[in-house]
Amino acid sequence: MTSIERVFATSIYRAKIGGLRPKAFLDELRMACRSIAQEDCAGQNWSNEAGYMGYTSYASLDDLPTRNPTFADLCERLKPRLADFAAAVDFDMRGLEPEVDSIWINVLEHGGTHTGHIHTNSVISGTFYVDVPEGTSAIRFEDPRLAMMMANPQRKACAALHNRQFIYVQPSAGEVLLWESWLRHEVPVNMASEDRVSVSFNVVLA
Ligand SMILES: [Fe+2]
Figure 1 (spheres, rainbow, N blue to C red):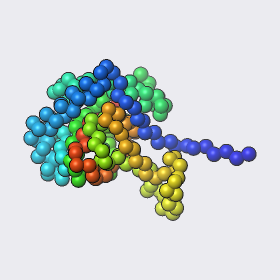
Figure 2 (cartoon, rainbow, N blue to C red):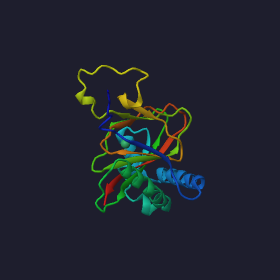
Figure 3 (cartoon, rainbow, N blue to C red):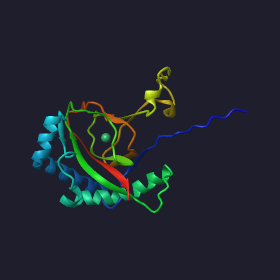
Figure 4 (cartoon, rainbow, N blue to C red):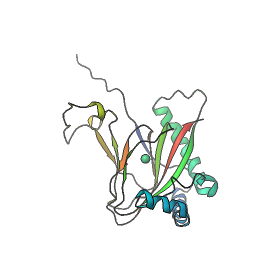
């Protein structure tokens, strides 16, 4: 008898945000992202200097939930999703809870990209999608073991999901994606003419 165990799993969690009036919430969040992006000169300057095509509040604002209650609402709506994810990956919580530690806006213009990176100093990271125009980029995740695959053959184009070395996830507006913060990911070039708007966050156990 033969058996194969699939071990060392990497989990990518995907869910519609819950809570009351999700459509109205999404509209409010969209307006909040847009107005902050227009007002935040430090963030605009940082984005220009960093070559980020569009706007991110990543380096300029660390107070979105107190600055605008819609972001506090988002953090509340994320709570059950974060608990779900922590349970799904069997974190031993030891009385701690997942808590959003930092949260920022991303407005990626046509032609913009966000190169491969990990999120340091956190355990769970994620993105909530606000505007996902037709034809915009999926988020790409890569196998964290790539650096160890020196003589590894390429996988078939039709390889099973768990055997692939790169995974593309095309989210919809109103969805949240979660993953463990060490998982490297990137946003390929936004080929849509409209902006791709999202809110990303890092989560610690507190
Ligand atoms: Fe990221």
